[in-house]
View 1 (tube, rainbow, N blue to C red):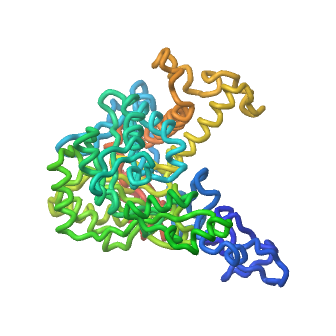
View 2 (view 1 turned 120 degrees about the vertical axis):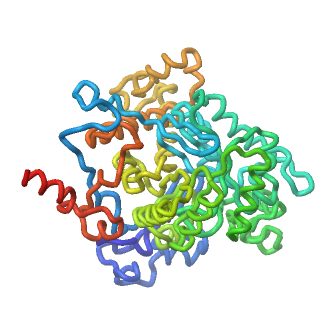
View 3 (view 1 turned 135 degrees about the vertical axis):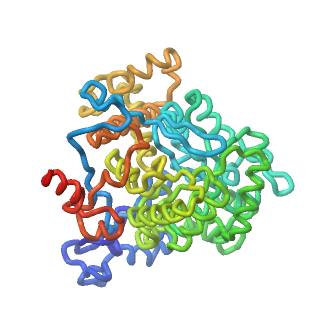
Length: 526
């Protein structure tokens, strides 16, 4: 099995001098020779140091782990059937995939409807998210799904107004909310704001709940891509000093005269802004939830990362005790921002294993009659078969799938293709579909009919996201139809078979030859 590549990766723009002869345990060239200019991570670290910790080029890309984990979604197979139907009459006229109901509901006291069962987790202050926000926000809104504004947006906003250490205005936050709400489907989806330590210190919860009309908020313990706080790169010393003044950790210290000189001559070309670690306690968590509800939050979500099993148990238990509306569990391997590259590959519990533990813990509490919040699985989901398997593995508790890199990719491609359409400069392999937005984008005609003249206002990135989601919706409905499950609520763990004994042991899903064993014998003996 191929595990993580050591000492070289496209993510860090590094490579070996002798790619066909590499030490498997160090990642170094078998012969490391004097005179090499240093193309590998070690070599580049010799002259650029901490810059090699992070994926590059920053701000215009996303990154996810390249580690080959022992178990992934391909180690499970979806079970179809030749008879019956759940959710529609069991006849050939009704049991067609166009009759599959894709809608889902999140929340308890104030339920939230989703047209498609997709939640886009926190995309915060990273430049790649900001650059593509309009396409992403509008695309998610017109699809009837949930979008989360991630951490540090107010703090990173150059035009934010802070008085007495508290945020009173953030044009960036306001514009992000408006981009979604202007196109929100009636009664479907919502725009969620997420908080971390610095956000709370700046008073972001009070600001968005009392001044911007936000109804759904999310407490963040972490994410699957890293086990430290969020970080971004800052290109100017003025921005670095501004972030330090707002209470963030900034490296190297922009107020140090040596750093100032190094930046002036180009030895230091950028700064790192880091967030602090949260400190979870049961009492503190309960108090935070109460305060948010007292401020007017109709729904409170919790997102946790790929921490050790005891922390996952805390997340499930605290979410149950405080009647959290949605618990998002994010496995190692995914990612969107600029997590330290080796950390992204080498820390945390991978998605399948984390999802299996989540099901185990939720089922344990359910057996005791405890409240179980809606759960969303996240961590590298991109296509419809993975979505089905996530729903099945976590059934009946999983109500949505979280995905960020896929929608962000669709937004970026949609923006690029749309720009080329408007410029009349399409590559040959796209030009074969046509030369207008309606011809090139599969959903173009549908969207123009739906929005009329407002179609011209649709961001091309949004059309890309919507079209991608429509592909996921049809693909998932076809898989559900084959399993004879015509609404998400009917998907169960019995719809999966494990293809390896290891996958069976980890997940509790029967090995493929053990599926239906008793029922098959009954049929044979009848």
